[in-house]
Amino acid sequence: MNNNKRKMKVLFIEDEVNIAFLYARAFEQDNFIIINAYTGEEGLIMAKNEKPDFILLDIMLPGMNGLDVLKELKASPSTMAIPVILLTNLSDDTTIKEGFARDAAGYIIKSFHSTKQIIEEVKSILKIS
Image (cartoon, rainbow, N blue to C red):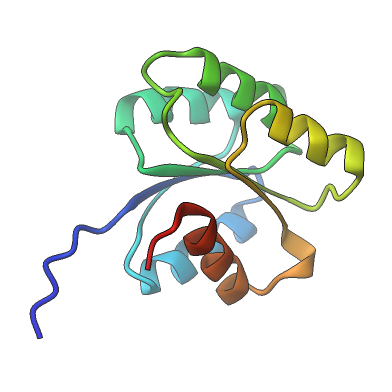
């Protein structure tokens, strides 16, 4: 069977290299193209240059935190339409509400899900199969 469906490009902004590698492998096995950024500032540059289909964004980042990155992404005409899913271990209501107030497409708590469950949750949020 010939599958001509275009692979979706994902920008994953995560400062922990081991976690970034783990998710990159899992998403690549599920037919996604992964681009990694390890700081918020790097992520903003890559979002503008790479034009990903969506962004997975950690909140706990060195320097600029993920909520500030999200605010910048949504304020820029070149990145405002890119869906951003927060992928973090912060599970307090205030942070979750802040993420959605800044126009996050979704909020996934890493420690509550396996990588396979996270991929399925991302597909559900973005309505892709």
